[in-house]
Image 1 (cartoon, rainbow, N blue to C red):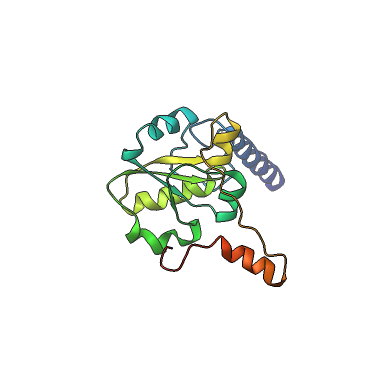
Image 2 (spheres, rainbow, N blue to C red; image 1 turned 135 degrees about the vertical axis):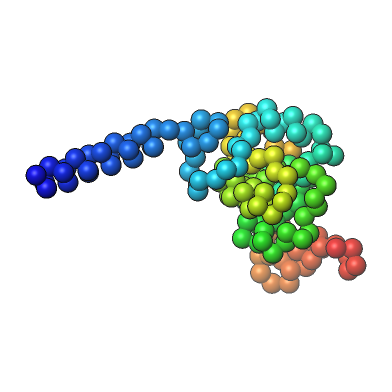
Length: 168
């Protein structure tokens, strides 16, 4: 009798997990590979509609600079890496609705939840790479600075592209 109960419990647990796995994890119906969040995943059309009124929104990109360089980004945004967001809450303007950005919206969704918990008006999250692969056009590609090839020539070339003192 105990064996039958154990087998029944294992089978019913497996059925519950199978049902959960079959359900879409976000509003877009696409698979969600990040942590569970309450953030709205914006569609390309929704995001483009918000971008049509840049005076009303603030884009916060939580990616690393190398990710922005390799994938691209949007014309005007505030760059605060996800790991540093808690330390910069006081610097984030509160006069605009916020859209958070990462590569595939996982980190952006976590950031959106955090900002919502801090009293910000967050419209949702979007992934820059996902947006682009779904037909959206990224506005900018930031070039990666040249790496010095060693010696003084490389260092001089790198310094030649730096802003003059006092103009940073």
